[in-house]
Image (cartoon, rainbow, N blue to C red; front, top):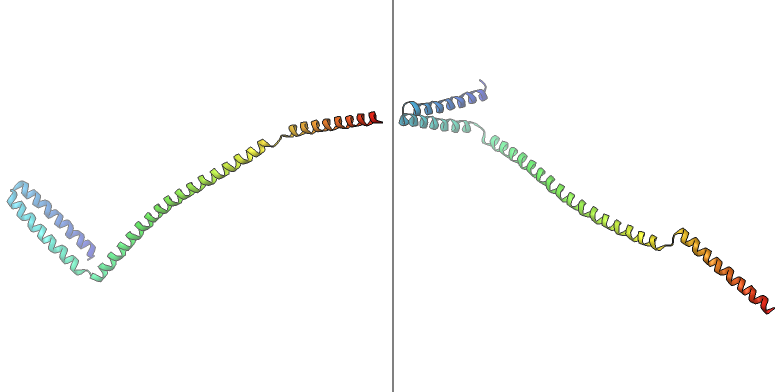
Length: 149
């Protein structure tokens, strides 16, 4: 026989007996039902003790250790992942915000410098004005030179 099937059948039988005790409480009275139910529960406790005694304690300890290790490992991995994700997200957000602010400031500085520089048409206009002034001075100096001669 398969030990797992025998255990399942025995557990099911004890469950059925507990149900019978509840039915006896309803049908025959509380004293009979409670007495029967207590008998079932005591025999079930003895059965569970017997099942536990037949297992190898080292094997059970190993199984428990393995399960605890798996559970703890999974929980630690999940928690570490959550914390790291939060930390990385916060740091990336802070860093990106800081970098964007710095770049924005630099762009504004460049825009101010560009705005202060004369535009091409202003430069051409200024060159034309200076050339005109230079011509006028040359003409005046030629006029003065021809007056003195």
